[in-house]
Image (cartoon, rainbow over all chains, first blue to last red; front, side, top):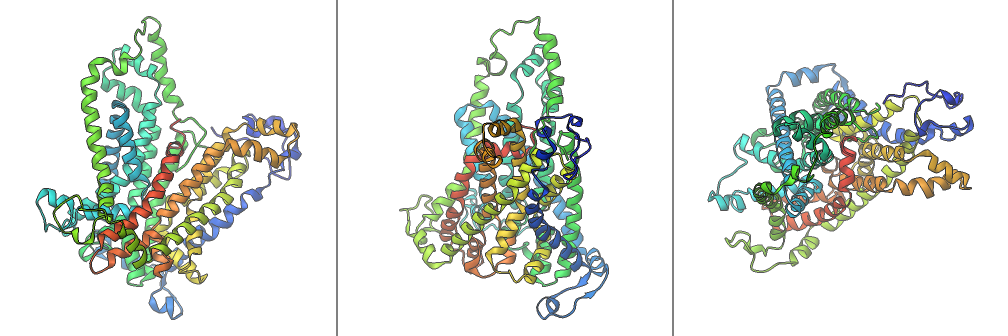
Length: 321
Length: 310
C-alpha cells in the first residue's frame, strides 16, 4: 500500500483526478484540500523536539565531554575530550561483561517469552470457556501491573526466610539472589511473567482469525497436523510473529525496573548489571554523567538497529512507512 | 507498537484459500464441527483444560500471596501458618499514616491524568490529519513517532536529567508529565490514525451536506465513531504513565513528590522490609490499572500487532 502519487502542496492544489486511491484522498475542490493545514501536526513537534530531540542531543554532547560532579553542581566548565569516554568504556572489562550478560539475558527472556506465549496461545484454542477465561484473566493481571509491584511480589515469593517457595521446597535460608545466574533466572521469570501475555493474546487472536474453512480444506486434502501448521497456519501468522518477536527483543533489551528492584541495583558486586542499570549506576550513583551518556549512546545505536528491522517487518506487512 | 489499516495477512489467506476452493467442490463437508472439536478429542480437551487451570493458578498465585500478605497481622509474618489468623485491614490505614503513600498516590494520579490529557490533545489532531491526508513526509512523521516509542526514555535518561536540570524542573511532577506524555504519544497517534482511516470521509461530507459545520461533523460523526480508539489510547497512556518507574526514580528525589511506583520501592530500602505495608501499597498501585486494562484489552491487542490481527 504505497502512495507514491505526487503529494499536493498546501499552497498549490493538485488536480483532483490524478489521485487513484480511496476516500481519504477524494477532494471536491482545492479549497477543501487546504482546510487542514500542517499546524495540526505542530503540537506533536512541540512535544517531541524538546523531549526527544533535545535529550538525545544532550546525551550525545555529554558523551564527548568530561562531565562529572564538579561540572554538574559546581558549574565548572566541561572540557571536550573527544572519544575518551568511549575508549574508557570499551577498555573496561566490566563493560564487556555487562554487554554480554545483557545480550544473553535478553535473548533468554525473548525465547522464554515466545515459547510460553505461543504454547499458551495454542492451549487457549484447545480448552473450554472457563479455563480460557481464567487464563486470560491471569495474563491480564500480569500484563497491566507495574513492573515494580511484579518484582516485589516475586521477590517475596522467593525470599530467603519468609518466601513461600523456600517453605514449600524446604529450603529455608537459601538465598536465590546470591548466585549470579540464579538471580538472573529469577528476574527473567518476572520479565517473562510480565511480557508473555502480549505474545499469548496476539497469537491467540491470530490463530482465531484463521477461517475454519481453510483448516478444514487442509484436513480434507489429507494434510497432517504438522503440515497444516507449517504450510497453512504459519504463513498466515508470520506477520504477527515477526512483530511480536521484535517487540519482545526491544522490551527485554531495555529491562530496568526488574533488575534494579530485585537485585538491589545490579546484584552483589554488580554481578547482575545490564546496560540500562549500568548506565544508571555510572551516571547517577557515581556521578560520572559522561560515561553514563556514552553507554546511553551505545544503547541507542543498538536499539536503532533493531528498530530498522522492526520497520522493515512493518513495511512487509503492509504498513505505509 | 503500531497500528495499521492494511490487512497484513491477505497474501497468506489468499494462498491458503486456493486449495480450499480446489478441493471443496467434490466433498460434502458433512458435520462442519467435526474438524475442530469432535467427540474423540474430548479426552484430550479435558487434559488441556486441567493444564490451563494449573498454569492460570500459578500465574495468579503472586497476587494471592500479595493480597494475603497485605492483610497479614505484623507478628504473623514469620509464623508457619499460611492462612493468617485474621485479616488485618488496619495495615492499609497504618501504611497510609506512616508513609508518604497518600502523597505518592496523589502524584501518580496527577501525572498519569495530566500526561494522558497531553497525549490526547497532541495526538488527536495529528492522527486525524495523518489519516485524512497523504501529505509529503507523512511516512517520515509516522516513522519518527514510532522511533520515539522504540527508544523509550531509559536510554536517554542522562540527557533527560540534564535537560530538566537546565530547566530547573527536577523534583517536579511537571517533568514526569512531559516525559510520560512525549514517550507515550506514539501508541495514540498510531491507533487513532488507524481508527480515523477506517471512518469513510463520505460520512463527514454527508453530515456537512445536511448542514453541519466541519467541526460539527467531526464532533457528531467522526469522534463518536472513533471512540473505541480514543478510549483505548486514553487508558493505555494512563496505565503506562502510572506504571512508569525509571524516569521518576531519576528525576524526582523528594519522597512525597514521587509517584507510587517509586514510593513503594522505598519500602525495600529500609533496614528491615515491612512486607505487609509494601504489599498494601502495591495493591493500591495495581487494582486501578488492572481494572482499566481489562476494559481495553481487546483493542490494545489489535493495536499492538500492526493490523495483523483483525
